Image (cartoon, rainbow, N blue to C red; front, side, top):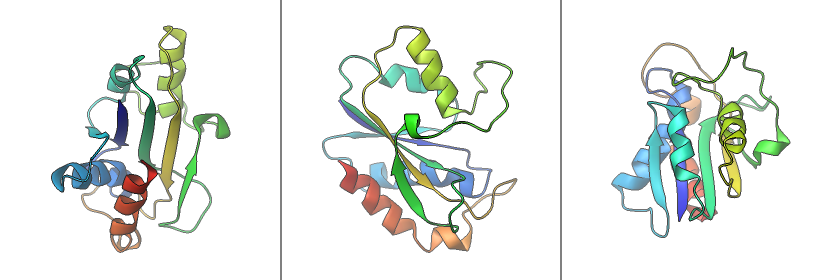
Length: 148
């Protein structure tokens, strides 16, 4: 199985981009040959999608990459390091790299994982996307679908 996993929070402005991309793909029926999953509630749920039958995972998320707001990039988890401070792993954990590390420590097989990172313009409290990301939304949907 192949999965597109959108992560973030709907109440974090551009942090919702991954969720919105996954939701749009599922609603439009564009998830042909893969499943689009919205993991807004608990990032630890990702572990359930990393079984032996999983052949590929694309994670879509806001990512601070030092680029202009709205720019996107594909990269592997091994290509980046986390800057988040976390005391440990919990159901409130919001660090993808820590969750993958946790899954690996549990002996979970890790399929090839790619991240579609989108540089946010606005993070923080609030609903909706910034203009910088909203104006390029269809580009993100097409890039995510085109990955598969």
